[in-house]
Image 1 (tube, one colour):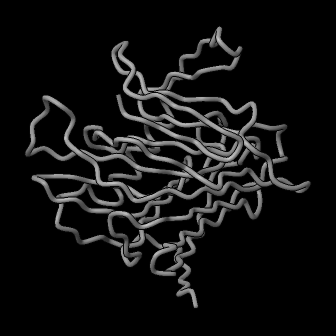
Image 2 (cartoon, helix red, strand yellow; image 1 turned 60 degrees about the horizontal axis):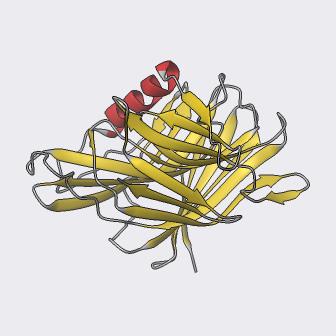
Length: 252
């Protein structure tokens, strides 16, 4: 039987790694979301649109406003590593996330996922749900070990409130997080690797599987999805490939 907990307040996390506080992590992500600019170009190979972003890589399923009410995806909790040539004692991280309206909606958005941290060879995982522009919730009692298969489902209960459900398929633990946001466009389901408020870790390859966007008429697959790639100072740091039900993001 699943162990289910509902949380509406942020909880402090105690870890072996000197992670930024949950409040700081959420504030940084929301600030980046507010000021971030996305560059784009058409891919001449298939006429798809690739969006270059300094903080995120993955894919977004888009639809008409008001049609997308949820997003679901699974991924394996992956240990980060220190990028080549960087200080091995520094703090590095990334987050594997599922969300609604995080990349393209101007008025609201929700992003939920697992943060992976490394410092001095020690690896720590935590979960976090951020809402634009309102705040962040970081429960501390969801247990994750490297290699665990995590499923995240985000559902908009109305235009300004969402529920994120985290399930550890290896331990059968489930946590439900309710959060308020700005007005959602309900036009986008996101499956992305997101940089947290540390230096970006080498995240290897992360596979989002069982990916779907939920609508009143049923589930949408990834056909026609918008692709996001991380680009910093003109250098691409990721590559993304998709199928109808999966997103693969690889650090370059």
